[in-house]
Image 1 (spheres, rainbow, N blue to C red):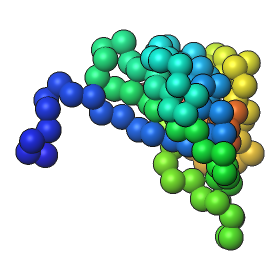
Image 2 (image 1 turned 30 degrees about the vertical axis):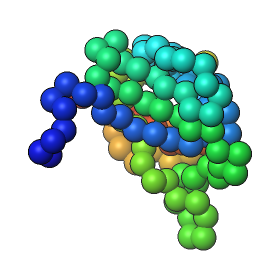
Image 3 (image 1 turned 120 degrees about the vertical axis):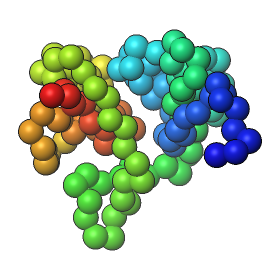
Image 4 (image 1 turned 90 degrees about the horizontal axis):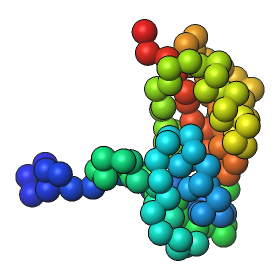
Length: 126
């Protein structure tokens, strides 16, 4: 896109009832760092300083349903995280507070649900 700073930040913002808690969870999952301590808008930044995941406090947050069901809150996006060892990464994410989703649609990938209810995927490439 014209006008975008080449080395400017880019990222994703998700909602949660507890922004700081979910930011701490993703900081551990991604190996990134929580930047700041604003309970309304927590930011998890990559070591490169270019990418980020922000978590916005939403007291009316309704977690999505996975797999989707008619009439219920649908997932708007999900995060994919490449890992070196899928089984080890799943155990680590569960120990941090994630849970394995009831439906697993692909081999080589695991769908988990974060503590706020957002589905995310861990996968091994190749």
